[in-house]
Length: 361
Image (tube, rainbow, N blue to C red):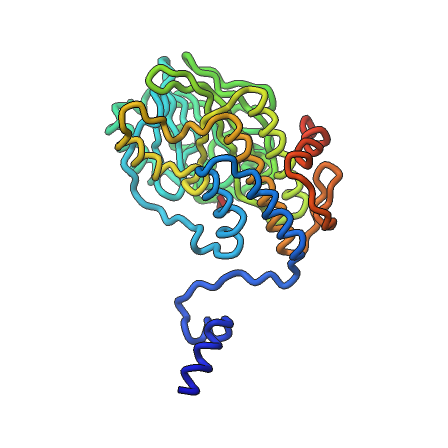
């Protein structure tokens, strides 16, 4: 009885998790946590949950990914291909997305999965099932320089003569890769930046530079229709928080920049390049079983989309505070412990930051 009691206490304390339960995933211990700041920023993020659909993003990005990262990981697996909007198709898998946009004069592909094999065994069979012709792929946009997004791009260049677009920093990063890199990166294509648009047929993809997740991260907006009803889709090119302080500060600033852009342009549809960041797999099932008149689950509304971006930005401040790191964003440092109203904080951050300057999702 005594031994059982001691063992139970030790398990609860996490003392024997590694030795006694070697297959158990452990939680992350933050030895230098700024507890007051973690509490403050978690409250900031939770206060931005303006719709029940945003709550899981708050939980995932501010807590699960940081404290229980194994629960956040999404292994690769097959997904039934589906049409999210009249002109927008999901052509990825459970770990990483790609999207195909039918412009009426060819197809734009956003991101290209991990490698040629995934193009051949995931994307192209999905094209066939959806009635899309891969030979119509004319433009490919890569959101950032992680191989799970550019891995299949060279194959699309070689096979369909597609033009590949990415930020200048994206192309610089790829040029610095070793000559024998696997997967091989695409040949240099077209550099795009703030204010640029990639136009094909009836669709223009608007480009916004949002470095931080990587230096070459871009975010996108473009028109979609749902049974003829117009909407504007937004895709944040990189939602995961990097390790370096300067990159984290850059990512927070970019999130605020994109949030202001979304406010100004009326983005109301959330899509991403990872399942954990837009719940595409769940949304696909909802779409398949919609009742008459029920709303498309990808349509969040403008304010909810903006708040989604702000939640993501605050979650980067949460992980910094957990690790004892002080971020300076818009003149504000996480070293301070005074609680600030989230909307006032972000209004100041907008004024200070907007216009300036393997994937962890």
